[in-house]
Image (tube, rainbow, N blue to C red):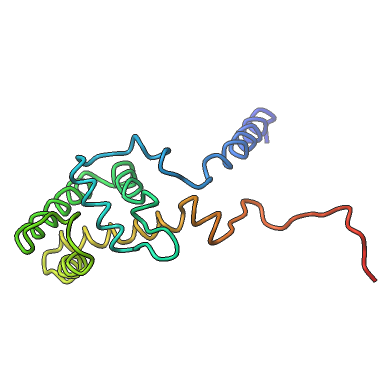
Length: 172
């Protein structure tokens, strides 16, 4: 092996180790502010969808933790144009069905009405609606479980597990 190749490899490894902790840390609402791809009304509907999937109990719900922004950012940055268009189309379909069925916006509907609409979309024969619901559900779970609140308060995630306590008195 040549020395230059080895030095380049070592420099890349050191650089990756220096950047990894900041990259792998939990996200929060302020870090997702530039990832919006939907309009304000559509974002409100998406927030209602994620809150319906993981509602508030004795812990904050997905809507309260800003998982709707996470879903938008993930679809915008990691999915193809078809999935991005499907997200916007699915949100519009939910809003239209809510107004048609209940005479009010999805965001203003009751829990039971929201559940009814989402279950109908999950059982739909339209593959785009099923894909929309599956994508949003999976990203909601992923976003909720990797949020800063859940990682620090519920799962007690440690970046580097196991502590070393060098000066501890030994008990007999």
